[in-house]
Length: 586
Image (cartoon, rainbow, N blue to C red):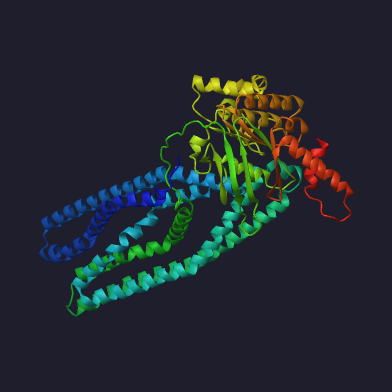
């Protein structure tokens, strides 16, 4: 059973990641302190070597400088490896959470499925392992270099500080000018990716019906919008970067000129002049790097915000204690499913089923039948009410445990790349006992002989979405997957929509067998030969429960309505007319 007391996974991971901050601070501190080596070496050469003409002093200073630079290189290697380790660790911790959250969101919002959160995680991880993060780590140590320049001479310090403030102002201006176009470009690029993925996913329909050109035009419009935003941001960022570069070069010349003036006035030495120029370049380097890598920084920040929206409230998966196998007693208690900005899809659905009972769910198109089936299977969460299996709310039941007790065949058959056996056993590890259950489910669904006729039998690779199979074969294998493990609750949404006569006979035989074994069945179908096997019927109309009761009672009531309809004056209201027609044809 799930518990909602766990903290969100992203918060937990970021809290644990803070343990890496202290080592990063120390490594960055060591690197930036050792960055003073060049300036100090230059200062000592001018003050000690040139004045004393001592080669021994030059050799010792050079050896000490080389050792310091080697230590700095070692610290940079360690810091880079630590950042790579943090990025890899974050990916390992968050990728399963994000995939789970994406699957749950896609199940609750069909048509919005995408792997964007995983791409966002890659973008954040790549940011941690790229040079784009170094300005963030090095910027806090800029005051160290400004302080060193102030110690050399206050005038030099003030010049460097004012120049640094101007450069920082340019960085802020760069953020202000590029944030909006980059955000709009990213949004347009995301829409373009979505359109392209939809076109590729439905390539057969696109090619057959000549839809490629209009789809391409819509995709190109989104691409043009994305390119426009990126070009605008690049142009603005390029101008700021050019100004910042010129400003830094001018500032470096200014500090050399001011240093020379101080040397002429005997207020500073030549070593101080050169060292101040080196230190100022190092102090301003993080700001200049930040301007150059701002696009990557903004992208990583936006990706992190999207991750917060997806995984910010999603807990990490934890082991669950399996609940006892239910007997199949099912109860829907005032189920409501709201729709954003419109009428509710379902309003107040209530019924009860005992173990071994079969219920037909019928109604006109858009009555809410498939939506109700998804709630009963636990794929969707209701906005109100509860769906109870042996008193346990299926929406609160851990999916990995609930899946052992609920068999579900959706209207759109969803098979995965892999073998037939892997799809039937829901990709469990194929041990001999598991394979025996696979064969049992195939025999029960009447698809065993069909599978034996495939090139490699149960080991046949079916391709992405079962591409090598026909629609009827996919539906029959999907039925075997639903029956795998003898679930006490079986939910079938139009299970015979792609079946021929033999497949339908096998379906009816399978339903009779599992019903006799005590399985509770919820069936969405319209063909009379399947409806004859149910015990109860639930009629939906515009999301509301129209009729519910024993099969004969409901069919008689619908037949009475049909007779009344034929006697009603023209233009009168025709309640559940489509349902009546379907039942009369049965």
